Image (cartoon, rainbow, N blue to C red; front, side):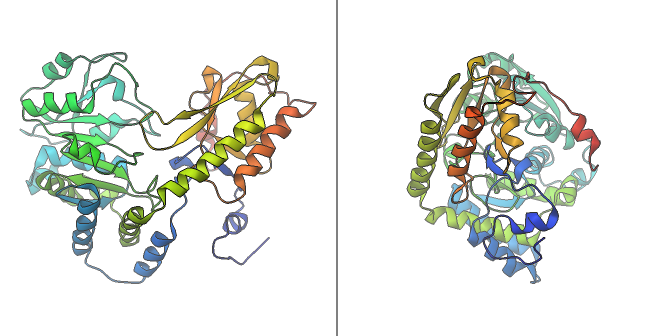
Amino acid sequence: MKTTSSAGSNTTIRERLGLRPIINVSGTMTALGASIIVPEAISAMAEMASQWVEMDDLQRAASTVVARLTGGEAGFITACCASGITMAIAGAMTGNNLLAIERLPDDTGDLKSEVVIQLGHIVNYGAPIDQSVRVAGARVIPAGTVSVTQDYHVREAINERTAAGLYVVAHHTVQYGMLSLDEFCDICHAKGVPVIVDAASEYDLRGFLARGADVVIYSGHKFLSGPTSGIVTGRKDLVRSAYLQNRGVARAMKVGKESIAGTMAALEAWEKRDHAGIRRREEAALNLWKDALQGLPGIFAKIIPDPTANPLDRLQIFVSPESRFSAAGLTSALAAGSPPIIVRNHEIERGHFFLDPCNLHPGEAEIVAEQLRAILTAKDRSADAMKAARKDSSGVLRWPD
């Protein structure tokens, strides 16, 4: 086993720790490490690691960078988007009342403590989003049904106890029948209620504030390719109130100096990134995979756009019985291969899965194409090749064994 490391290696530290050298074609998934951190962020984190700083001053510097990139009046860095949601909700409840901040989450007194969210937006991203609201001490008020939200559903859900409206932008949400952000903002603002947007996995750093949101929360560790972190931006008074939650419920969500510096560097690198060049490399990978699957029995593949309009595409692979695989069986075979290939399988019960090209190291696109063809053209199939998609939490319950 290797005991030395080399800059840029994708396998050395995993070998030392006994971890599988996976290829990620699932996307910017937290459970897989989110993204490949850009060199600028790694450098900033290493430089900051040995330095003493006054954290409020570091966050003031971060606010300047966040505001410039997002168009917000102020901003700060926190542990992740989930913590950003809790902090923003808590801030909408307490304002600058320091005693109220200390008394959250169970003593809400006379505070506004209800949060309106469309039912089709109450998603699970590894944890239920409503829990991020409840951690602040707020009560979730669902509006509409899982298939449709009308304007009056949100309007009538708002009352004198409403602290904020929460709007979620994600592929997890119901993608039709919901109110648009513009409609949601118009209804909330007409009643004096601020709108907080969870935009964790979104490329657009300016559009949500421009469309009326009061606070927007982004991930620093997904498309920005920074360290694990969340970015809170928007109206200065609401951002300040959210930041003050570090004196209360957000103490358990604190972010380190290294992550703040790394996220600032990732934001600045975003301005200079060759987005068009990255897009071309992703398109090349998609076309390579599509060509590799051409003509294989029971397999149909097509390139589709991102459902929330991010500037990227994915390969959707439909698996029918003629392939002698189910979609679940084929993804299992890929994950069990050498190297393991982890696909985007959140719609697996519908008989298809996706390949996402945004987190590839050089040469990995070719390995994925080779593995796909090798598995699908092999004479023999594994015993579970036709297995049905089933949810099984037993592995989670065995950790750390």
